[in-house]
Length: 518
Ligand code: XMP
Image (cartoon, rainbow, N blue to C red; front, side, top):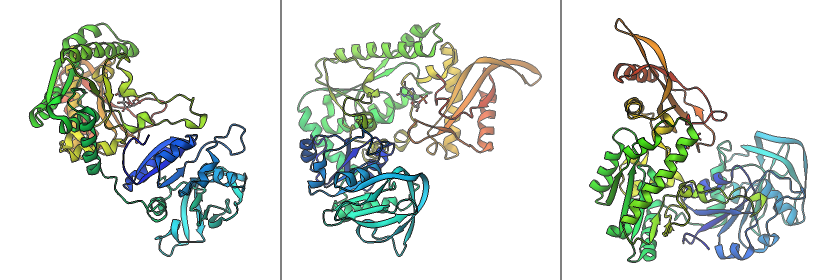
């Protein structure tokens, strides 16, 4: 069961909280390995996981709801330290014979707690007795189970934190994992290092070492194929595999003609030139242009590009002969079985990296990054000596510039967009903003507007500038860029990109808009 072998591991049981991934992030940031599993993970699997501590997440349910998610009550007899957060605390309370009831008012937002006991969970917080925390609950612990004592109180929660120190079972009514609890990290660290006695062994250099040896062992003398997109995930996957099995790896880089300016050359220069990897560049740009001719509907564009990509990739893979494995850059957020509070039958998030490839491909999948979050992948990239430029690259959609050219994709329109987009990136980098925002790019609109250049009237295209801040692309807000950079980008694009006479800035947030325009 345990997918990554490291001795000090924490299990996070997910009761459906929107913050569950954040809990895992905080634990990993403390350099302790952890995995998220559904709340109803069978006891045999929990034992096999051999966690040094278990964290029970929050969740949207009330513990008295008829279909409230319940973990196996034997959890409390395991002898493994437990930390219940919000709903997790209420679950512990109820299963050990305490009482939970509706709070008078639903408590949501910032609150103050008074610490009664500043040893173990609240250790190393100096002399402070009060603390700002983030609350989000409708129920509260009314009567603690036997053996528990109060660690902290708040106005609305007489039991804001509790512990049975003998059995090492803890409960927090508030959320230590969110940034609105400024000392939350210390509390989590106290649990990990003080109570669970974990060591900080989860580092990306240890990950790289362990991955390389386990990949070698698994692959033996077989051949591996890896698809390259020019993005961080696939590049890191490929370089990691190359370190592990060298010439047994062949990469396929499909240039669909929808990449950014100079991108395919850059990727080849880096992976083939710098790292000496076997990268087959399949230049399918003309083919993609042909099949996109006359297509204006966004969904149709995506479908055509996806379908053609598979065809081109499969053909190239077959030409490589007898590879046994296909490597992909799937990341942890793609594989977490979230929405678990509805039970194991609930839909599991689809692996969007895997999504495109047909199930009947004859390869076995290898996903060396499937335990990692994005920022961890970036650190692995740096460990593997990939240039920072590539490692910090902003996300780029699979269908590429086709979804940033509204209306028909043609080679002329691709050229216009590439030039404008290159200016956006150059200026964002020059202003040291490129790594601060989630994405920054140009979009070519299917409208023409009137302008005047010199003494002449022009009738040309409009570029929309899209720059957003986000943490996970699920929600996003338009970046409040300084006017000076907006002015520079606009001037440069209008003055030097032939065919554009107007630039507008997109000030829509997601939702209700999306980040990409198509
Ligand atoms: P939207 O436009 O849905 O985009 O707000 C959210 C994030 O996903 C990226 N994106 C894609 N990534 N294949 C990908 O690998 C795609 O088809 C795709 N479409 C959108 C987008 O750039 C943003 O970061």
